[in-house]
Image (cartoon, rainbow over all chains, first blue to last red; front, side):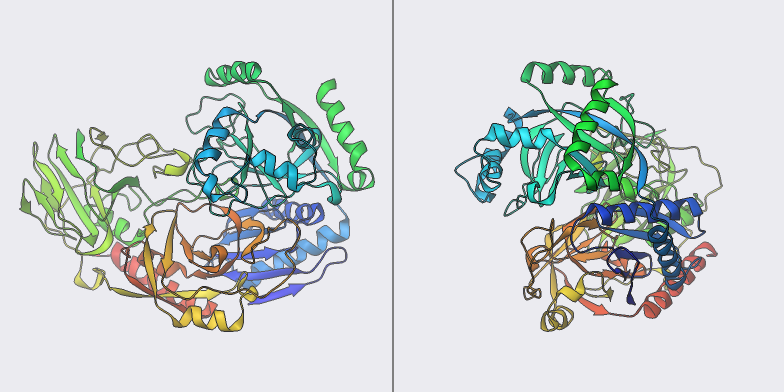
Amino acid sequence: MSATTSTTTGTQARYSLAADEFLFVELSEEMTLEAFFRSISITQRLKAMSVPGIIEICPANASYQVRYDPEQISAGELQETLESLDREVSAQQVRTIETRVIEVPVLYNDPWTHETLMRFRDRHQDPSGTDLDYAARINGFDSVDAFIEAHSGSPWFVSMVGFVAGLPFMYQMVPRERQIQVPKYLRPRTDTPKQTVGYGGCFSCIYSVRGAGGYQMFGVTPMPLYDPADQQPHIDESMIFFRPGDIVKHRAIDRDEYDRLSADAEAGGFEPRVVPFTFDLDDFNRDPDGYASRIKEVLHDH
Amino acid sequence: MTIDVIKPGLATSIQDTGRQGNYHLGIPPSGGMDQRSLRAANLLLGNPEGAAVLECALMGPELSFSESRCVAACGAEMTPRIDGEPQPLNEVFRVPAGSTLSFDFVKAGARLYLAIEGGIDVPEKLGSRSTYSLGSLGGLEGRPLQAGDHLDLLPVATSTREGRRLPESLVPNFSKHYMLRVVPGIYDHRLTDESRERFYEEDWTVASEADRIGYRMKGGSPLSFIDREPPFGAGDDPSNIVDACYPIGSIQVPSGSEPIILHRDAVSGGGYAMIGTVISADMDWVGQIQPHQKVRFVPVSLEAALAARAEYQQQMAALRQMP
């Protein structure tokens, strides 16, 4: 079974069986905030319905999937439910979500990702420079500093959490022509420092744990994102800090501040700057630059 | 009562039936890769069906028991030995106080499940004792066993019958050439028709990179994708998609060359197109395939997947009712 339905606003949703326990739903082939918004709206409503037989609901950037128990609900019934939620979401034009703005301090061009990228230079498109040099050049920036300015200057939308425990995928909140895009490594690395700020396709991410990775590496944050040992007061019992819909503002920091914040984190005393926020997609679409300024104000007035 | 780990084996970890409900945050279900054998070992002993056991891959551990406890070993054929004396698989036997339990090298299958009376006592994390190594979560300090570890056990709740044996009809028959049933879909429309047909016609060989996260396959023809302008945000390679969720059991093919079947410690999402999903009833078998063995993928319908699922449930019911 693979079927499509149209909605009044968005592209057609494509429903595909993933064997007998998962239903995979692609809302858009390309990445857009519209598709993300539709995915998060459908999945939040589905969760609120508490449908018997639904085991896991996983929203992603421009798609989502549902794990279900086919003894309790059939794939056909589930698809009908999802189609009706999609129609509801489109018809009601719900375009706002209650979320939060989070400031993430980043030491760009740090020694640890530098050491790692040198080790894996043979897997990179441009072995002569660093990942930052490469990303700045192919995106038309004059210097690495100007590139860092662009990465830390705009807000980012957490459009998916996953890959490994608690890793946020972030989508840049600027008009498409200004969005940064970089390819992934030619062959994935077998190592990435913990809390590396990475980049692949149009997505920025923060690696929550040390391990394999294919994204370009730009820096590290002292902020813990995943807390299996229950030592970080800013992370609840889910062990994961980020949620889809969070808005992130990176702040470039120097080595001294990095060391100070890392020591705080080590001692369980890291306090991220977090402000509650209502995101309105239409307001954002009308004036992305104005929206970016508002997000900065919200953080600093708080 | 503790068990001392003298040698850890190749990749031995504490697993139970796994944790649900956290995949949307990147935490996979984990749990035994062969759930049927894990549950069988517990049921033989009279343990709760989902008690924590040791999952031992390819080469088993060497364990020293400070007190006497009954155990049951199900799954891969790795002969257990007490102080060198061979013991039966798929049957309850007692390990006396002060003795050492070890295992021969694997003869068939890939993972043995060692259940111990009472079950292993480690704290539950998000509702499960299973080890998720990538996230340093669950089990013993979130990692596979190491030499020098101590395993605590829960108290024994029921009386255990030594010599209780799994009925022959419920003992798995391991193959050297597996037929894994797959429901085609997700992004398989992006493959060329020729490539799709060939994927299901060729033998694939399991690579040495075959672990709890995923099983990588080699030896078949590289797959080709239909040409297109890459969608915004997906990346340039034809096998790239805008990063999406990965179903457990789904088969992704990075750059079209080596298919990977994701298993119970899967990464929860990423940017490679998936071309189908192994049916739930065959996932236990995936965990019992050794590197270098051959696999053929067989396309089936949802109806066939549901029929296989019903058959699997019947086997589980028979396990629960065994004399």
